[in-house]
Structures are given as C-alpha cells and as structure tokens.
Image (cartoon, rainbow, N blue to C red; front, side, top):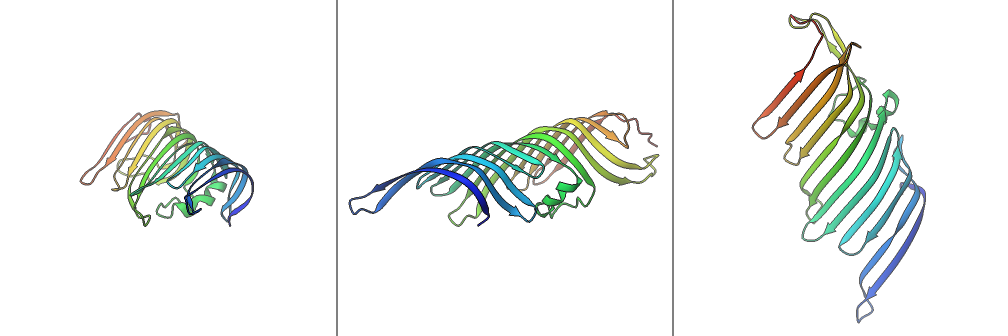
Length: 231
C-alpha cells in the first residue's frame, strides 16, 4: 500500500436484483489531504479529488497534488469500460525543477540521456491524454498533447569551435517560450516552439521552431536571430 495517510468521504449506493445479488452500485465522494509514495524520493502530498464510479465508469474531477518541484491541478480523469476501455485525462501543471529535484525523475526518462546537462526548467503547461485499451489492458491507441509556456530552461551544451562556429557554445537557455507538443501511438509527433533563446549568457534572441515526425518523413524548420560569429 503506497498511500500513507489521507481523509476519505464516501457515499455508497448498492442495487440488488430479485436474488438479493448486487446488480449495480454507485460510489461517490471526496478524498483530501492524501499523501502517497511514488518512489524512494517522490511523494504525492496535499492531494485531493472528487470521485464517482459505478460498474462502467470511473470519474475523478478537480484533482490537485504537489510533488517535488511540481504542482498538478485542475485534473479530470474519465475511464469508461465497454468493449474497449477508454481513458481521458486533462490537467495543468506548474513546473519548477532544478538540478537537485530533477534527479528524482530520471527513472521515468531512461531513454533520454540528460545526464547533468539539464540544469533547470520552469513553466506552466496544459496536458491532454487519450488512451484506448483492450480487455487485457494492451494499449490500442493513444494521443498526448502538451501546450504551455517555458519561463526558463537551461541546458549545458558541449559544441566546440569548428569550421562553422567561431567559438565554443557551452550553454543554451530558453526564456518565455511557447511550446506545443503532440505525441501519437504510432510514434509520430510534432513540436512547435516560439520565444527567446540565449547562448553562453549573451543577450536573448528570437527563435521559432517546428519539427514533425511521421512514418516516412522528419521535417525540421528553424528560424532564429543570432549574434554568434559564424564562418
């Protein structure tokens, strides 16, 4: 049991058939002040949500929680059990991750080689997730989108001076940049970003980026200002 404590208020209605067997039920209520363990260094705290469920549907609304460096809020979750099982979730997040608390999330990003290069990220995002499962909970289809604003992001680079660059680039920062990311179950994705960037602590410059990956093509369009000297 990963739930350490919390308060639960529940109202349960049971419906019986002529043999006094439960034919249906409705449960609804509210959970609050919940604390739960996700991993050794990650805890959900001050968690609250309203819930409703019966034999075919599970609904969670107004969910919010705090986790190391993040606040998740305005969360809604809808699960419907029919021939297939569908899940839809919408929530917002306030992110303020730095070198220390970023380490707590590395286990979720094993396929990404962040090492110690990602120094911090701060921003506000809106998330939408749609997933379809079969009866064995095999994923049949999913779509995920993330739209928001990166207030500040800092990432260490190791780009050495070469025939194109006249000086080393050691760090890139994003400032007040709007992002729109979409990911699909067939591994296709699209990224759009627009805002300000800085290289090596120089003055902010404008940039705009669009990257689309489909089954047969991967297109990348970048438009940016630069005060870097180029060969």
